[in-house]
Length: 128
Image (cartoon, rainbow, N blue to C red):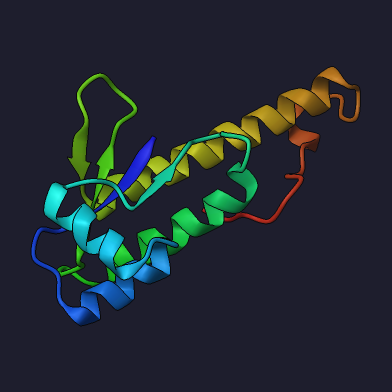
């Protein structure tokens, strides 16, 4: 899981940015900031992945565009949660897209839609 954690000291303009990421109210965002709690979680390949992956890319773009973003990204996929950089998040997004494409290709092969991997065409637009 990927979590968006607001930084400890946030301004009014920071809250405006954080509201674009989360549906939480202003007081809830301030509380999450003070407690170091996530304001948004992304479950990788979860039931809402098709829509969530687009929002994750949006969050990545915010994270990568400014070195002073009012949040950081926490990777909680392993036993030891780790704060990750925009470059690390970018690599993860690309990796997850590769998994999607491989899964699509394997499904097409198993179902007989294609005879070999060179015939594969992605089922959707590239979002990564």
